[in-house]
Length: 371
Image (tube, rainbow, N blue to C red; front, side):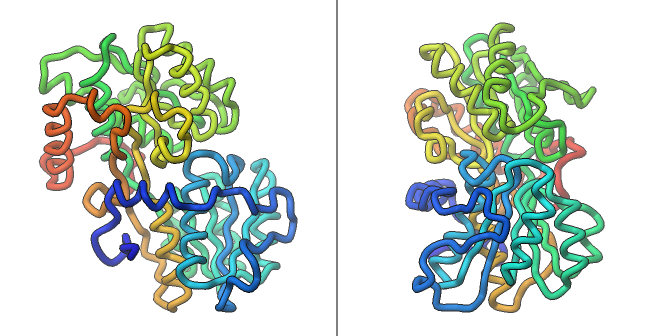
């Protein structure tokens, strides 16, 4: 029933939402501090000796964002393929090397690492263990091309964030919108570039003057919390943008971004938000009334597909790049805002999506992966 992002048309946003809402909550069985990893589910559930494993970054598997969605991809693969799984959560960046080693010690056939910050650890482990397959979410170091057992899973979220920027510009009441990141790394700034350029495109098309606070595309600098875990820091950063007049906030900060949703909820409808990585109305359901939409990345499908390829001996190290064209990234449904977003604006966003896919509209971001 699940379509592969690698070999054909991908899941639509609606189907992605349905799958996400049916998934077991990530982290409920993850061994937060188990040095040797752990197996998900009961031993009797597995009908295969093949073992897929995952190492989170410091955000953990319940981050309401990319770790959580990636984890869902592994549990989806386990349900479909009857394989064994293992996982370990990282509490700190210093955990990465030991956690990857624990998965090697657990005799995993493929190890999926989640997040840009695991790049060096993953590369070193793949080189040292050529008989184990590796995949990494959100990193495509040029050095990976020479390592046959590591596959990058990356997403051109500049494209989908462009749509989000246009949506924000078309719905703001104050004519000011804001964005901030967790850390200043390419997988964060790619969202911010696309968002700001989407606002600029709206201004050009409409003769408007919507301002973007928190990110300067020319200077490649803006507002950052300093990590992905500090929700209070995220709230302070969001409040700073709100105090300057922003009524729509686009946090690219993992769990720290929840602070922005808290500020939006406390505003009694004056401030709203657009979430990232996954459909926020699924991953952070409490805040759905504050979410106009979300920029999703099909990490769950990409992870499930690479695990299946490893089991089927069809694994390759060719990077997977999620785009608007293959539904690897896009805008999630409008949910509570469906009746509030003007039909004309929805149609314009659909047209812009088609124009990005065709190449009529090009996005300038040094951080976007090549497709």
